[in-house]
Image 1 (tube, rainbow, N blue to C red):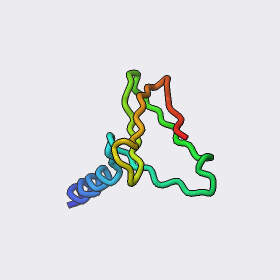
Image 2 (image 1 turned 90 degrees about the horizontal axis):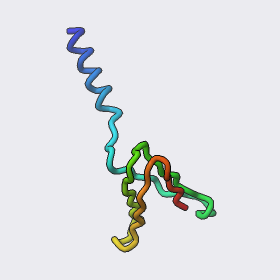
Image 3 (image 1 turned 90 degrees about the vertical axis):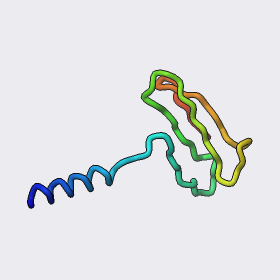
Image 4 (image 1 turned 180 degrees about the vertical axis):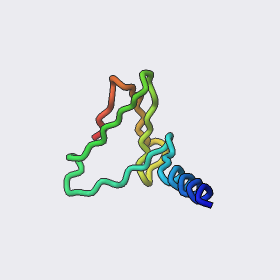
Length: 77
């Protein structure tokens, strides 16, 4: 019975801290001066990857697309 209980808690613990690796949602930025805010986007990948920022309420023409790699990060303001 102890082994079954241990396996159950181990299973719950492993699934409780997972993250979807391809999509990341960033909360809206609050403050009086939005120009003072920035996102620093980097990757451990040595090859270029595409980053897409999709503003809330915008359409496809509002998307911001940039290619980055580990020695070429991006500061988005």
